[in-house]
Structure formats: C-alpha cells, structure tokens
Length: 391
Image (cartoon, rainbow, N blue to C red; front, top):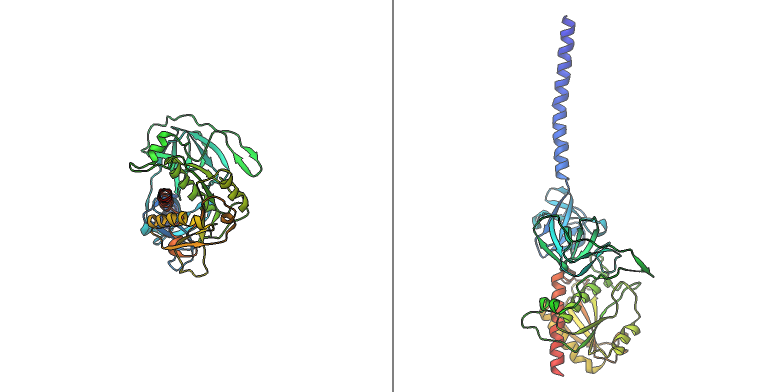
C-alpha cells in the first residue's frame, strides 16, 4: 500500500515538473509563431531603404516607396524582413511602415493584362474585363499583385484599378485566353496594360486647363532593351526596365492631349539605333524623344540633361529639359550637342533626355516612383507645348 502511494506521488511529481516545463515551451513557441506570422505592411515615407540585414549599417539592396505594400516574413527588434519582387527579401525599419489590410478593387479599363511579374516585358498570363472585382495583395512601384474570383493571379498596372471597400463577391466574368507565342514575345488578344485612348479617357487624364497637341505626331523611344540593358541603378535595376515604364506614362499624357504617339519599342526588345530613327523619319514625326537614365563614376554627380545633334533641334531639347527639370525638381544640367546615332540619323526634330543619375543616391531614390514618372510626363507635355508655340 505504502509502495503504491509512493509510486503515485512520484508519478504526480514527474507530471507536475513536465507540465511546468511544457507550458512555457508552448508559450515560447506560440510567441515565436505569432512573431513570424505573415502580415502585410505599407510604406509611409516617400523613399525607404531596404537593407541586407536588420542593421542600419547593413548594405542597401533596394528602395521602396510610399504606398507600396509588402508581406512581412519575420520581425527582429525594430526591423521587419519583407518579401520583394522575384521572391527576394530585405529588411526595413518598422518606424516607416504601417499595417495594411487587403484591399478590394475593380478593373476600370476595357481589358487589362495580368502579367507574371511587375514589368511590361513579363509574360501575360491572362486578362481581366472591366468591372471585375479583384483582391490586391501587394503593391510595388506602380504595380499591384492581384487575385481574381476565378483564381487568376499575377501583376497588373495599378493605374487601372479603382480601389474600394470589401463588398459582395459578385463579379463580372473573367476572360482568360491561351498564350500565343511569337518568338520571345507573349501576346494576348484584345488586352493591354492600359485603356484605349477614347474621348472619355482623354477627359479623365486632362486637367481643366490642358492645351491640345492635336495633329502632332510624337515618337517616344524607350532607350536600350533586349540584350542591351543600359546602365544599372545602385539597387541593381537595369536602365532598360526604367525607360519603358516612364515612356508609357508619357504616352498616355500626350495621347490625352490629342497627340498621335508612336513608340519605337513596346516590350523588352532590342531595336538598332538606325531603326529607332527610321520610325520618326517614316512617320514624319513632329518630335522624337529618346528616354534614358544616366551614370557617373562620381556618385555626387546628379541632375538631368538632354542632347541634340541638328542645331535646329536645340530649341526642342531646351524646351523639354527646362520643363522636366521644373516638374521633377532635379538639377538642370543644360542641353548639349552630342553625336549620337539615334539623333544623327534622325531627319526630324530630335532630342535624347537623361532623367537623373542612377549612380547618385538622391536621384536614384526617386526615379523608380510613379510620382516621378507623372512629373516627367507633365514636363514633356509642357515642353512640347512651349516648343510648338515658339515655331
């Protein structure tokens, strides 16, 4: 009897000890799981450095911008590890981010491409019709990662999403089409990354005082492309992938003002310089503008400049540079003569603009933002108005 009691007491003590150990361990595990739980945050400052590790002295690997939304992977003291494009990760200080709820939106253009990655050169995986309700999971550099009710997932240009509050799941049907491969380019029928230019779209994009460019043919040349990457930003972004998104915003601005706009390339394709100039020559363009970003071995050099070859194009270059510098607030380095092939072979009024130095921390921190591209577009528009009025 005594032996049995002792055994029972011993067992109770053992269970008590194990319980005392197990409960804290469970609490620790739960705390760890809660700390590492996936959540989303939005950037609250104009530009935020993303670092290699959770330390202010760590290497800067990227920069994100106000309004961009990211998934948090884990927390460490005052730092959050976030998931970037292409599944890369980096650390940001949590003083400059805020919790973000998932956003519901509606497609507000006739037909919108859904792409595999946040780039106009990325493969199209389907398209969404106007009125389709979608859920926005991430926002980055003018792109939104979305999921439709049918399960279609990918990146879309966020300019064509009207954000609203979560509501009924009733949606318009989603149309997906099979990919049609032509070389390295994937095409989807009846879809684009933005709305067709109509009178209603023009009204929406034009301000009350916007003057017309009707009757003018403008050729816009996104520099580099394909095998030609151009230079690279401090964060490693190739110049070619900055030129095209900038030009697309400018195109919409000019089309809204009534201009006929022609692009020398519409995707990540290599186009020889002579062919770029020929686009302007063959279409008898009223103006040709080539878009680039600059680089210098001196990281302190900053600002924007543009070039001309024919003396008669100097006035075009000056008008555009002055207005773009005024709108972007970057340093105006002036217009210069340059024997560049894309200008030399051009019989039309032509200029090549360098939109800031990717080697300069100040310039590089803003040139990838939607706000900057909108300012460039406004400057190009005003510069063309000044140029045509002076003729």
